[in-house]
Length: 457
Image (cartoon, rainbow, N blue to C red; front, side, top):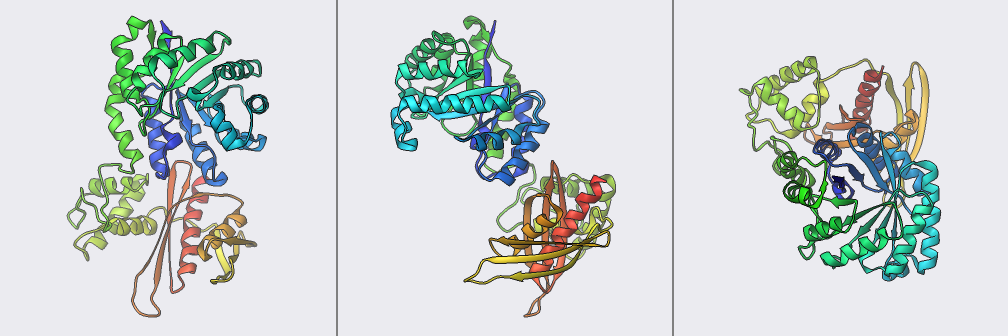
């Protein structure tokens, strides 16, 4: 039987969800039988590259795809973010309807085809697998669509995808489009049907019957969902002479958890607006298991030794408080877990900030007795300080969380800062206390950084 290739692009449209949730979604999709996972395109080069490289490195069963931009630089940037994947694929994504070509890029069809050919060649020079993604394909001129797909094959693309961005395609129309393009080229043809008019499943079936080689699914938005398509394949695939790798039982079991992660609701321990746990009541009677569960819900993976240290500190704090919330747990982990010798020390810092000047930071650190300095401009004094530290160490770590709070009262109150840095899939927390909240933040960052450096030895 013919195998239907399933690409899930949920992470492409994931929006503002945490790094941890993105990796959990990727792990889940990798385990339920999808053939490819498409990641979000690069917008913030530093942060997005770190996220994409982490996901690409841990995906073992799927192709990892990413959309390229419209320049050779953006192609290189996209490829660098997934190059560590076992099976990377670059998706050259261009509009093919007259309205989008002229409105978005002020290009006629002939020029857009020329641009697409150049982009495919540039992508092919970087990556063996290149795919042409035709945006708004359902409103494209059919002859132009056939021409650009044939040109894509000539220039090295292994597949084309038709997107129903307008949400107007009927099943028989999509089937006709697939058949037309299959008649002029031999590369794989995939479809991304919209469910805006509740026709996604019917469109997918018609496209498959017409010869489509794959479908695109997503758990969010008005698109074909993987659980529905898996049911179609399970019940009617044999009748159509096709099959797919989706495990219907697994995808149904995991679908709700993926949707919850997409909406920022994860884990058995949840947090309410007042920063206290609603499903787990942490107090002096809480067990090691309950505390460890709360710590894992925050994203930490601690050793048995550190778990014991955190629990000891938790018991000490719980003896003075009736209820322990998320801020206290974070502070306990930062102060008790993985206390290591300091590789970097704060020698000095000078911060300049005001309402009519850009914030600047001059940070001097010492490492092995050598002074190293960094100067940076940032969006506020703390951002400038963190960027200056990155300049000193020559590396960017994702800032997973940053908290500041007062620990004493009055004009000379002590401020406490907690910084959570992510290195790959591991989370490191550091704390700092000072009457200068910027100084506390710098010390918290260095505290977390020292744990990363120590762990890497």
